[in-house]
Image 1 (cartoon, rainbow, N blue to C red):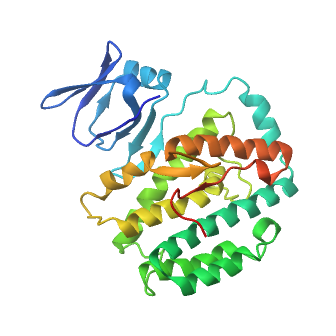
Image 2 (cartoon, one colour):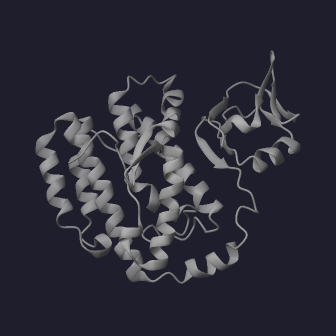
Length: 293
């Protein structure tokens, strides 16, 4: 499995030779395909050959394409990622609402738990107490919207009372949106590789959202981005490189420490197992390796 994150910032031609990615611009750079975990095409003046695209798929490299503002826009997804995809999609369409509500309650619980851990680490004990109270009152399917109420206490605590997630001019929202898009991309990749549809969620049901299920499953992982932004001295011209390191951030899942990219794979697979059994205990939780409530 690859371990390198490769980002193409400049106008370049990308091709493959002898199991290498070859990048040609002012100079020529070669990177072994087996070493690459993620390839990010940030510059829209990059030319990439079909042969390289095929080899990237064969090597299971996650390829992300950015828009004109250098924000992640889409990913390369193989058709042959799962041999029994049709069977799994038929089951997904028929998922029972009760099982979905049970797992959504568990997902919300873990999200608020991770938010509470961030508050504890920063010493925001008043808001921490509020979130712990919400943890003890989450209902099936989170019908009382404890997730939303927790956010109203959480974000003002970590970013200040004047912070508004809807304010595009606040650079912190740019950081958050970029970090969240990286997490969403990793989750969507594992959903697709597992043979399921990202469009069919258990809580998010937007008709125009192609990533409803990805948005569901990424919720407990968002606080990892929040924590990185709070702890890091991010700059407007360099924050993307810093946030990219979250892919290899160490996390705790099922009592084991592993990098986030591998943990997400394990987490997504456990979700599908839990949907089959209807047992929330089958769903594994991603959290910080060095914090406990």
